[in-house]
Structure formats: C-alpha cells, structure tokens
Length: 461
Image 1: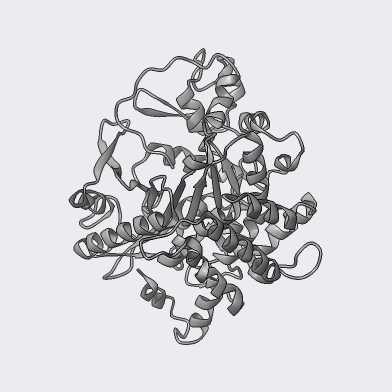
Image 2: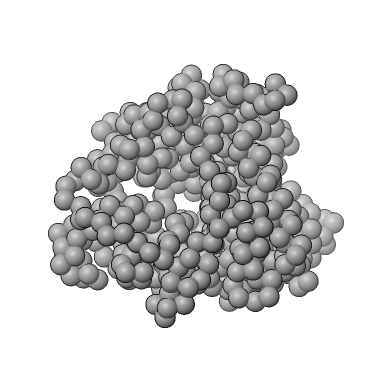
C-alpha cells in the first residue's frame, strides 16, 4: 500500500483517456531493464506475552520504525485531520518499510536485477528487524494470517486511508476486515516489454496463481484453532469485495490490453481522494463520475494523474496491473520462501521459452475450470484436482521444471558462480514431500504442540 508525504504538489487534471492508459504504457521496458520488486509482510508481536503492539506503546510500531534510522532509513510522514503528524513508513536504499492496517510490517523492496540481489536485500531487512526487535522486545512471524488473534485483539494504525477502508469493507463483504487486520502476504512485481508481452504474462500469471497459493499456503489457524483451510488468507479474498478481487475473466479475451484494464478499473468503486493533506472519503463512488466532475465527494473537481494512480492501487485481483505486474497469490512466510516466490515467477515469466511452455500448460482451460481450481486451492492445496485430471501437485512438478530452466537460461550468477535456480529448492522440497507449509504446521499442532497454539511463536524469525 502506498505512503504519502505531508506536502503535495498541485497537478493538472486528467483531460483525455490517453492519460489513463499512460501508466501502463510507461511500464514498457526493454528486457535489459526488467527488474524484480519483492514485497513481504510480517506479523509483529511482543515477546513477553505475544500481544500485537499498538502504534504508540513503548517498543511499539512507531518505536520499531524510528529505530530503523540507525540503518539509514528516513521517516515518511502523514498529517492527520487533527494536525497530528505520524511516521507511517521509512524510506531507504532498499525501498520502503510501511505499515499495514493492524501493524503488519512490510518491506516494499527496491527494483533489482537479480534474485541474488533480492535475497541479499531480504536478508539485510530481516537482520535489521531482528536487531530492532531485540531492542523493542518484539518478534516477527512469517505466516499468512494471525494464528490466534481476534479482530478486537488487534491495534489500528494511524493511516487515514485505512479508516475509510475499514468503514467500507463490511458493506461489500464479510471478510474484508480480516483481510486488512489479520493477513500477510509475499508479492512480486515484474516488468514487461510491450502490451502483448504484458497480456501474455498477465494470463499466465492468473492461470498459475492458484499454484503459487498452494505452494505458499501458510494460514491454517484462526483464533487458536485449525480453520479447515490451508490458505485461509486466500479464502478471505473470496469474500472481501467482489468488485475489486478475483480472476478477471476478461484478461483471457483475445482483445485484452491496456484499454480493457482501464475499463475494468473505471468500474472498480473508489475508496478515497487525497486533497490538501487529507483523505476524502469517496467509498463506493465512481471514477467515471470523477472524470466528468460529478463525484459526490468532490463536486465540480476533476481527477489528476495521482488520483488515478491511487485508484489503481485499490483493486486487489490475483494479478494486478499498474506500470508493472503484481503477483498477489502467496501467503506470508519465512526467509527462504520470501526468496522462492520471485524465483518462481521470474523463472516462468522472464524467459521467452519458459513463458511459452508455462502458457501451453494452462491455455486450454476454460474460465469455469480456472475459477474452480482457484476456489479449491485454499482448502485442498496441492491436492486440488486439475481441470483435465490429476492434481495440482502433478502440475507443480512440470511448472517448477520450467521455472528452473528459465532461471538457468537467464544465466545470472553470483560471485560463487551459482545461477538463480537454487532459490526454487524450498518449493521443490514442498512438492516432493506433498505437504504445503500449512500442513507442516498442522502436524505440529496435532503432534508436538499438543494443541497449544502459542508454540507457533517458536516459528518466528
């Protein structure tokens, strides 16, 4: 989610549809400029009693953020309606450290050339978190969802846009507040060279997103008990807001491109407009009306390019387009799986032969079959049945082989002469074992933990 500094420049209004397409067109880059951006969220807990820290308590979220200054991070500020200025993020060479609604800590990493750099960045960040955590008395959990906390147990961070979203979520779905307050994810942002390249990567990414969800499934507990799912985080998205989530059937149409995505986004209801240091509540209103100067929240005003960019960030499909493609299907996880997710998608999407091979595996599926697979995965993981026979585990072996070959073909080596394919090893181990991360946790819960969910905090990194 984006952060906002206190001061903003005045922008001219949008005057043509070309300006709505412009962010996507601006994302086109030649292959040599393709980069990898990795985002990962962590659950924060106090080590003395496992509670989720508030923003302002001693050793709480604000202290964690400000302690990051020792590593060269600089505060990003937001002024609230009452004039209070809060630190809502930290900016540095490795990207941005920001806050999710209940204090989940996110690194939005820098755009990097290789997976070796990505994993080094991740390691630096987690080392910094560990150092700061020891000073503040906090630990960090790599899971897809709080395993024991109710909504009421969790604090609310002082970010204006989150208040608008919290008020709107219950109007459009039953689990949107759980999405905001209780979940964590790993995401990967990737580039494309042209509209056609974007469309092919988008389609392949959407069709294979259920596989990523299964491989990273890591949210089997709710309020201290097994919830019947392997990725409850993924299930939550199915009842959050149907207007801004899902598998986007139009992406598989022959005429899909930037214009179709613009049309989709114009039909996604708005959340807010940022004006004069304040987030104006426009929840449920229409960006099409905004373009005509008929937005009820701001009568007679026209949107700017920043308003459109903000709006692009408020849709949450399984794959999202801005000026890059975001792969959004994975639960949060520990260090080695943070590195494995970009390896999975870079291997499939950044090599032409791999992209062709991956698309060939899934291009014959109907939209109904894609939806059925997506809906089966949160509970069944790799055991979910494929559209034409077999299970997702069978497909996983083929896909990981393709990703491996794609990474080998990239030929990006570290100082030891290793290519990037080794980052797939945690996923290969999952497929060979037949157990996704959530099933390993469930085995511990029913075995050595003897039903004591507090033992999950031993999984902290």
